[in-house]
Length: 255
Length: 327
Image (cartoon, rainbow over all chains, first blue to last red; front, side, top):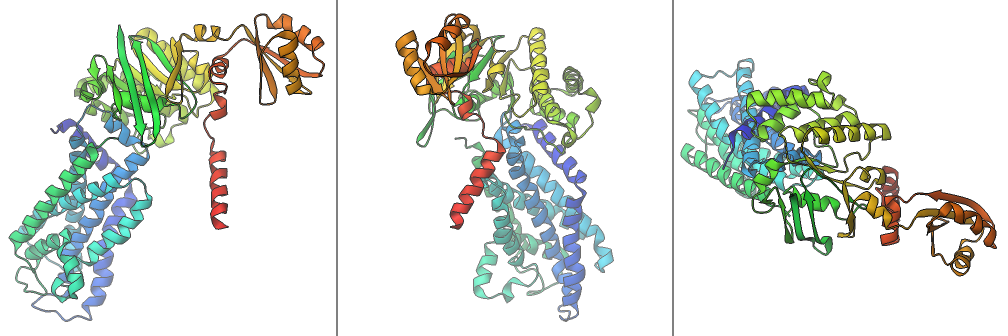
């Protein structure tokens, strides 16, 4: 059972804190812009446009994926902060279900990630990428699904993480590999087989592939979507449900 | 009528028995205190009553609701102020209270009214829209009490409510709690290891090693110590102790380099003691019994011996273990 007023106020708190900490907003926006401008433009002059797409255009879906990945993980890590600074207890002794807390965190993380993905989309004209209104809408819709998936995964990790020490390990051994092994920077099919297997078990791969369906419409592999759109969406949705259920379960546990 | 009932409650963590088969009940409107050294099981008991922990055996109920079976009913009936602050320092006082009101499902109009009411009670109305990170320790505590009362709980739990606060702030908080008691029909359940603080309770349960070793009013607990407490420092405490036993027939304990003994009329005994002892008396003290003397009598230790470890101690220990590791 989900109580919606607590869910609402948990979201409200996350939004207030997000917009109060200007550095966090700046950080999440600076990262993809830097990659696009610096790495993207640098590589752009080395790699010939293929199938009508420049390298810069090719990595753009990946940049949206990256924005969502980092902001979702950061949002869900707030659970570790809440626990460390005691605020989690305020929620745990309130007459609300554990599921409401998890849904509140998942929803706020999702909305914040989608908001940031949209900001990146708005910046595209400055990068020489032009989107139709339809593409904009499609990308926004898929962003919601992908953000929800990654946030749920983050919550599951945060529920199991007991201190900040684990955070660096998560960043270095999970988040960064998830980004590099997602087809964001290079096509999945061009990877060595060992890495390709890892890419296949990464939910972000399918999220980014869905973005490629939207943004590289006439692209063909390797510089285009590599899986059917239905498969992408189905996998992301299934992973979301599994992650969120596991997260809710690990919250319910009390010693 | 009892509002909190605890029967044969036990909690074990792997090999440690934190709470060992305790039973007690608290009457409505009472201020009930758990007194004991750190690690005695006070916070564990509170956490079980607050539905944060499940018990290994036994049962606890608040306002007729079982803490394990109907946690939501229990949660609605209680307000809690934890040992460490649980405010969100990145939010304002108002936002922290509003968050609480929404968790407890107060409607919008009521929320605004209660927030103003409680901020007035704790005299923080002028800081309503200030961020908590700019609050002092005492202000944070007061705001937490305001938040704990916002949903009009029937029982207010205070886990070491004044730990880490200066004596002046400690008094202010207590004045406030006492005023509150007169106005509202609220039951207060608190834990503390400060003797002076425990004196404010109607009834005290003294805890040690997970067990309740005594439970009564502060006055009657102190009657367990017979009369006054005399402390003596002599040139040879051990010899003096034996002489006291032989010549005066009183049992004295040596602790912290001083002898302590109980006597019906301490003021009259002191001159006789100084004359009668063969060793030189260096200093003499006489005091009325405190709860610490009660604890000492019951356990042979003082509560202070195992008081909270300050940061210096923790740091020292860390440095020590670090050095050891380097060798």
